[in-house]
Structures are given as structure tokens and as C-alpha cells.
Length: 165
Image (tube, rainbow, N blue to C red; front, side):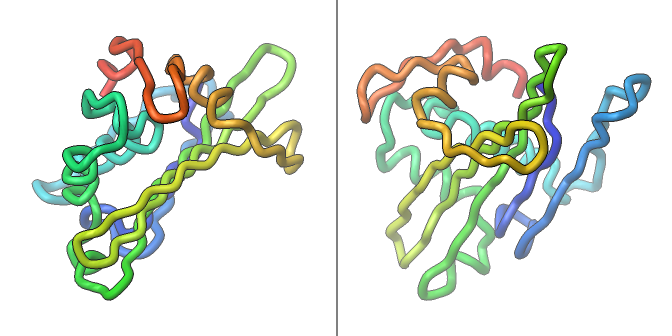
């Protein structure tokens, strides 16, 4: 599994939409280094990846709750929280190569902020051979990431998956 692209919208110091494209065609240069000054957004980038892929489970919660939304509030851009209705989100394209085809899964987690209230949406899409787009059920996407869905509100997770971040 390789990250093809990350899109941050109003996350931390990243104002509006910011894309990070990773060249997957160069088999020799397979390592990405993230560098920058203090406060540039390095840690925020990794928190955004973790939160997009795993949601509340990334913070040790089995279901979305007030403590999880407090963590989400920390990564949303400060100016966006001041708006009457603010929006933030993270989109990640992951490529799975089975040796025959490259299959791209897109994970989209978005938040809407209105005063102290935050709401979240999570969506997954599958791109097969180019631009063919299929909506993937959330439980299928969670299975790809190693997350087992217990019921529609609770998830259990293999913690080893999070140790990367």
C-alpha cells in the first residue's frame, strides 16, 4: 500500500486546499522525507493522515464522542473555526498493487464546524484502471485498513497499524 496523494483542506496551518503528490513511478526513490521549520505543519500532516484513515480509533476511542471531536478541533485551521460555518477535510489516495493492476482507494473525511458543534462525514471510493469510480462500503474500506467493524457505531482496531504514525 502506497500513498499516492494527500489533500488537506483547512487543516492546521494549511489554508484552503493543499495537495501533496507522491511520485510512485520511480522504483529507486521510494522514500519520502518531510521537513520544515517548527510550526510548519509536519506533525499536523501526520495527524491528519492518521485521523483520515482511522477516525476516532486513531485516538483510542471505539466510537465518535466529545473527546474525539476535541482532538479533531485541534487540527482544524483556527480561521476556519471562527467562521459561521467552517469546513475542513483530509483526502488520501492509497494505491494497492496486486502485481496485475494498480487499484486506488480514496478515503475522504470531512468536518463541518458551526460554533462549538462539529460534524463528521467519512466516504470511500475505489478507482479501478484509470478513472472508473465505484463507491466502496465503509466496512470494506475499514477491512482494507485492518479495522474490524463491530457494529455501525463501534470499531475495534489492530493497534500495530497506528504505530507507523
